[in-house]
Image (cartoon, rainbow, N blue to C red; front, side, top):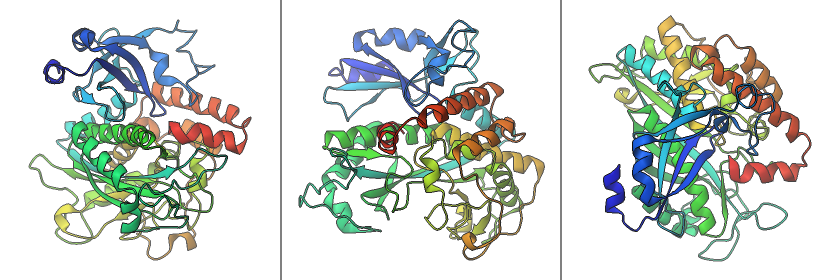
Length: 444
């Protein structure tokens, strides 16, 4: 890590940042000349900092604050190390960190440690999950009273219509996307294909598959930070909020995953299109946990505007082969790449908690050898099926009361997240629709 800074003598300041329960970066700015101390000893801030609400406020009922004296945790660099922050004007480095207790044990309320614990369960069985994510986001002109598509830097015109798979829409913002890909190279984020989507000024970038789930979540978290920061340098906003425009589809964060055994073979590959028993077991685990873990896939009030019938987001708890109306899709293609696509999450999620929920639920299904219901065919919106929670408060209740979620998340993290979301639910009801959009637009 020290070598990176020596190779970049122009970097004068660093940011050390951990991810909180809402996916926000929390940390400090430090002069680069003191970086060696951070690398060696880490830094400290209160456990409660990873448990703030969406406004960055303490949780009123949290025992972490007054009851436990607002104690400090120790934060140490992750294996990611230093990387540039290309959206800032001055050369600056980011050092991702995660939290530990005073005795050196991981802090159970840290989202990155939640995912690590799930990955450790896979490792104990000689298994390795391989993950890829598709992140949708909107480019938005938020300079006026209402949100609208930013004018094209090329033509100066606004295209107020859907532009599904439009090359013209990509070309209209070519300067932004060229800078974005250059920045991804600098930060070692494996950005692959970009497409324009069905919403106003909506795009999707695919991140390449990775056999390190922690790194895959890191990539998604860093990518969201990069896109939002870089858009501001270009004079507009970028937002991963689930549904900024009521009349258009929202943004999802679809996750594809397979599982390798100790020989490196895909345990979902049967040599044919249907997949193995292990694939069915993983699907069953995901379906069983879906209702209770919806809060992790739809963590905000605005998230539930996306989860409505026939709006390109799933509403039923079901699975199917090559069926994008289902919550779980099994894509066609080469059997060696047989995988599961989990389609519930919005772009506004914490990637670490989302991935912990998906992989944790899948492993529970594999461990229990559970069988899923029959796969659906055709339009799942038209079928009578179990439903994903349709409101934020019902999702919080289901998460809190669940007997399934504790299989892949710690009791402390569950408690902290419930307290966070109940506080947000209380205060968000005091805001106007415009104020709600304002808080979500830049944060999530």
